[in-house]
Length: 126
Figure 1 (cartoon, one colour):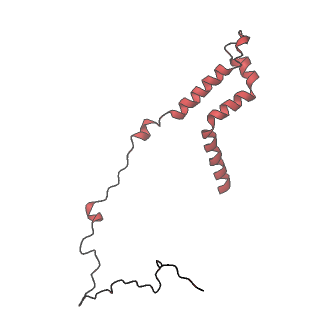
Figure 2 (cartoon, rainbow, N blue to C red; figure 1 turned 180 degrees about the vertical axis):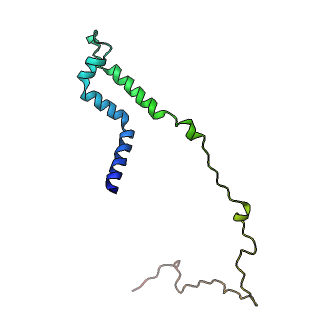
Figure 3 (cartoon, rainbow, N blue to C red; figure 1 turned 90 degrees about the vertical axis):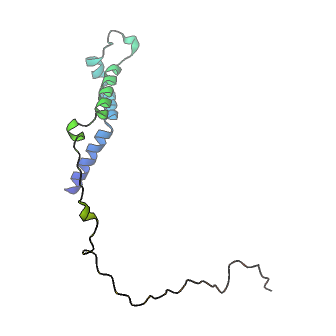
């Protein structure tokens, strides 16, 4: 069931993405019918329009529907979630108690002394 739903959603996204290409493919498949029914230049065969004016109208319509802004009802909705200040800053009562320390212990300072340094002159081994 999940695969069918994923396939359906993928198909819908691809159809929306390639809507202009699908208009061109439909024009190419039904060129004779479009020329016969919708061509504005039937009386001028020298122009060889073949329904390209109809294709241009459909492409403009598809481009306009792609660039149309979302409905104004969706654009005006704004959700703000603000927590109260007390929820952001913990109070001293909410903090865990600090451990009691009687004396400061000093950490050993970091010291690195390699036995063989990497920067040394080359040596000759016979």
